[in-house]
Image (cartoon, rainbow, N blue to C red):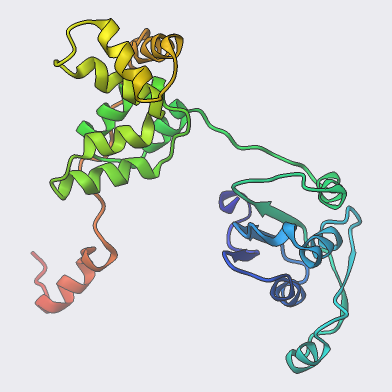
Length: 257
């Protein structure tokens, strides 16, 4: 979204009430209105009414707020205004709760962004730097149900801290049943596969068929795509970025040589 419209927009994120959004929409009339991660907004009557007004398909929308009059007067914001702002809602979980939410959906385009684990992995390659962590995750992407770019930095932080980052990341990447089967297969105390199956069932993880289905998932059937990381070192924190111009100023006037 930022790549498409840049900073010439009104961005509202996190905790924001419908009334606060009404005020910001008035102050930013005509600008694109981006509601980022304001999850509870469309679950309240005031929120859904406001969104329906802002998301009308007409070029010029009429938006009103008839309550909280003293506050509006103090802020010098009218109880009704018109705007040409277009609205985008970025949210982690969208549910059609009722007819009003369905009416809101009908006013716009509902786009579901669900990149595959490999798409996320390729995106991480553009900025991540640790080959060991990157390769470890790559070899297990076929097991991943829901992936995240944050996994890479979390793994690196645990690695630098000297903690067991592999086990932690596995529990984050791999579904519980598949992870349990992997641990049972790696446990040398079991002499046979049948013993592992019994332990799996006794742990309440599923039946015999579930065990073997998860065991099949653990097998890597295709070669792992080779991706070379461009970055080899983590980025410097903002307070450690070297400003060459400042160094030259501290050194004083330099000669022509």
